[in-house]
Image 1 (cartoon, rainbow, N blue to C red):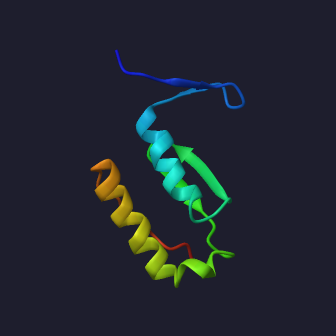
Image 2 (tube, helix red, strand yellow):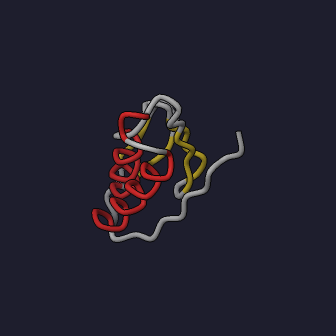
Length: 79
């Protein structure tokens, strides 16, 4: 049986891989909004110290692939 944590603030179960995925997102911004088990929005407006938006996106994508072994697509929201 897979291991899950329960998040009482949102009343749901969180698989370990999602916790690791969210940790990567939070490494670049405290403003992360989870939309589903495989989708989130990350506001990198105040994250300029990590580089350009393109560099941040490429870094997040690379870390997800390397650390979790998962493919990841990233889209930029229109301003």
